[in-house]
Image (cartoon, rainbow, N blue to C red; front, side, top):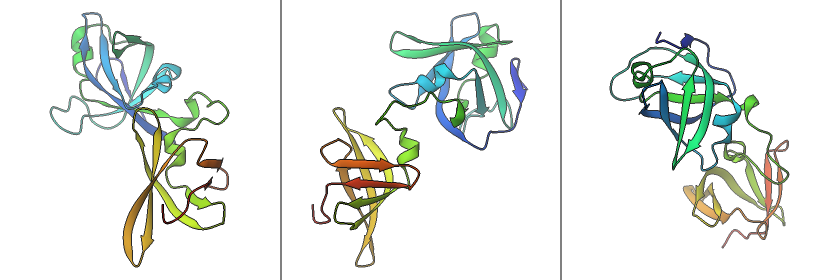
Length: 187
């Protein structure tokens, strides 16, 4: 393993949240590309689980645990440093590593806020009880988020999109794995 990186097991609830893009400075700091516009999970967790880069040079194998000393916003990017990784060479060796964080260490969302990963796979039903499909993914369009819903019609796999805004979303019930919407199948 690399300096500062301990062999570890991936937590069962691990979510991929970003990747390390480059070394930053000479004291072991590195740049991070977060997969979220709000990278709070990176800031709240002090243990990041890493997998080697999917492409390019692989400087380590298996799962590594990196104990984070500090992570912060700097200019238009996220930068971080880890215990035991004290120079540019150590940071450079992490380039391309995929970052996973245990979902249990994510900050608790506020009322009526949800992690996208929690919405994927939920059934979508309208007020009349008509099943509209299952959430396949979410898209950020700038001003709003859109649910992309997979459904079958006449034996064909299709998609519909519903804006994830209060005017169309009546209820999100994570326990029941269901979203109630004000939307018709022919929209």
